[in-house]
Amino acid sequence: MEKVSMNDLPDDLLLKILSLLPTFKEIVATSLISKRWRDLWKLLPVIPLLKFDEKSSSSNDTFKSFVYRSFELNNQPIEKLHLKLYLYYSDIKAWIRAAVYRRVRVLRIDFFFSSTLKLPSCLSKCTTLETLQLCGLSINSFPRGFRLPSLKSLHLLSVKFFSNESVERLLSNCPVLENLVVNKEDYDSVRIFNIDVPTLKSLSIENSKGENRGNTNEINGFGIKAPSLMYLNIKDTFSNFIMFEFMPEVIKADIEVIFDLSEKFIGSLPSIQHLSFCSLTSKTPYHRGCFFFYLEHLELCTCSSGWWNLLASMLNDAPRLKSIKLIKKKLSSARDNDQMTRSEEPTVVPKCSLTHLENLEWREYKGTEEEVEVAEYILANATCLKKATFSIRFGDEYRNVFRKLKFMYRVSKTCQLVFD
Image (cartoon, rainbow, N blue to C red; front, side, top):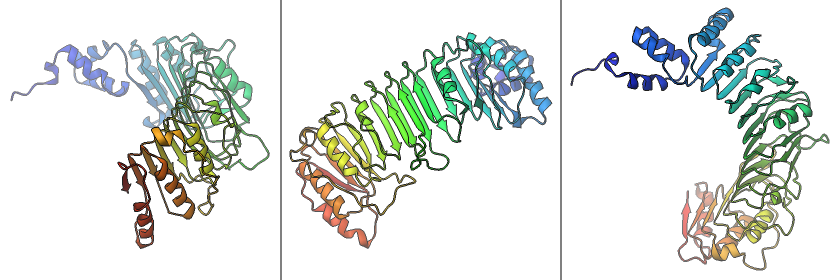
């Protein structure tokens, strides 16, 4: 087969190759191949990623020089600008202005030092910026008239705010925000992180660092008001307070918390279809009379001594439930020797057991007296059950656990019993 040189390829194909290169640095490096490549990269319709990592330069001056030279070499739009900084540069605002001029769509700033950044006013004029990712910096104030008119996705990763007003002002100035990610790792002055965004569709919160505040008298946590929200993900083993406003559009939620919950918690999610829930509280986190007509998939953590109370309630109040997964996530405050407390079994067989429940998966099943009673109840009443999977440790001491499960009565004649 005849070998083909890269320079023999047509311009359209070479431009495609250039567009797939990961960063602007690699694109510029190709200009050393020939004059043709130097001219070609300037024809790219967009630079996919302009990434500046301070550690990749031998000195601060070299780094600054490379950043400015990179902006001067091209006029193409920038898909994403990523700054990784280990020292504070007063030039940051100039670099962001240059990216705004080139119609940047994604902006990420990583600070690996303690510094406060005032977001530049030029962002208020940027109608192309859709994603802003901030990591490791502090925000205290905003320029007058600050606004992010086209921002749809905001990531606040280890970002410190000096006041509740700073949080509220930032979020209120994102009029089309749809996706919010909050990852808190350090203490700051914000006790209740209020998220009031009417356009928000996806919210992810992780707050798992530092000393557990769950048992202190000081209130710390989140207030969430997002009536258009559809996807909710919370992992918070730090706060002692989370309050939901009514969120009728949420269809999927993954919630992992450590504190006693308000009764309105899950009851604020009437349209939920897929729920994963883990809490150390023994309280049922919704009012009596709540109805989860759309819930089909339930994953419930068994780290709380009262998890059966919640499962029994959900069996009654979720008539279309198709699958149940029981899993022990072992939160930091969970104790393996906690005894499960049980409420009375439902006097009427739940509708979901008669008509919908098809799959049961139980991880870390140990075969305690209480667990056996729960397993017997589900297997004896789930007429549509197709598969029941139990994860059991191997060893002589667990032979009796296998035997009891194997000979449990199953009302569904088609139910497959699986051990893994």
